[in-house]
Length: 262
Image 1 (tube, rainbow, N blue to C red):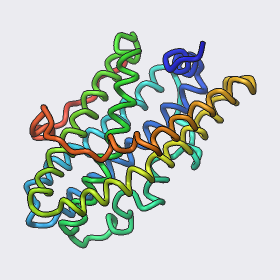
Image 2 (cartoon, one colour):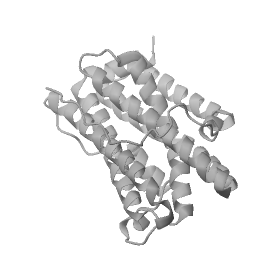
Image 3 (tube, rainbow, N blue to C red):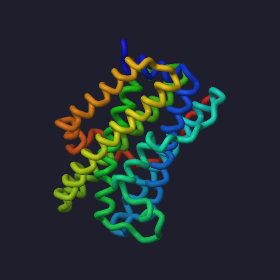
Image 4 (cartoon, rainbow, N blue to C red):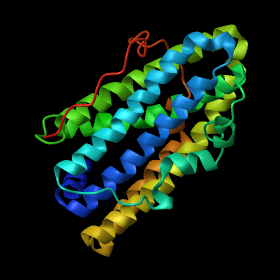
């Protein structure tokens, strides 16, 4: 029977599929690290107290990229180029989700509205990341090779989501509520479509590597489309709500270091 655990176990057990999975994950995390580092450097003067938290966010993302690369190295594997159709982070940027790279590459300070936009987009994408890592933690928290990595990354993603909630609520109290809700909705509807397309592309690549029969590939594609249909009707709403998190000041301290994988 197909299940999330059996599917990921199959990917994990094959060197080529595991290498592609880790390469995609490492690339996305490293890109997120660069983006947050640039945002932290360009924070407007009025929001400078937020810069250390953005820096911590970026450091966490960089750490996650190193973790995925270390998991490959432990198995004697080298990263592979990420197929463009599977590059979630760059596809989001190409569709206007997140601050444009041209803006981040300049030395001009960002505006408060830019920071509100960044936090709104992060709130949506961190929801996805938190849920994905929660699923992996549920099935692989005690795995001898993956367990520590899964637990650490999952904890960090939960922190990132809490930070987005808390900071957006702060900005909403300052009068940015309408802009936040508008941006959240636009971003969520775009993200679920891109996530569907990336999921289909990743499963297509995995299917070819693992030699899945047409029937299995068809069932998996149907499942991805069903998730999108649910998210398009109602599921996107979980990405736009805001509530004060239990974890307050979740990014208030230094980033933790990546574990060693012997």
